[in-house]
Length: 58
Image 1 (tube, one colour):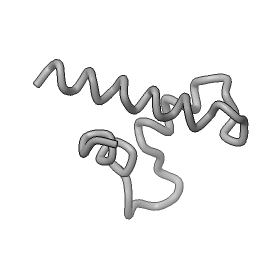
Image 2 (spheres, one colour):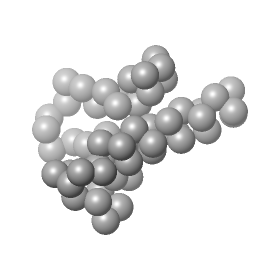
Image 3 (spheres, helix red, strand yellow):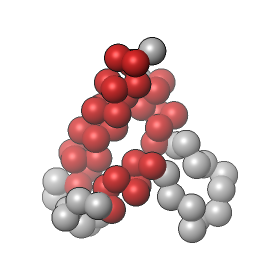
């Protein structure tokens, strides 16, 4: 995982559990449940997609 991806995933570390990261908010809009088999793969894909967007605009 790249530094940008790690920062994206942990962007709200240290804040109350009620606060969710942008990644968590995006994943909440999908129809994939956190306990399902493909959730982790989808989460990694969304993370890579966002990192790619951030790199292309920099």
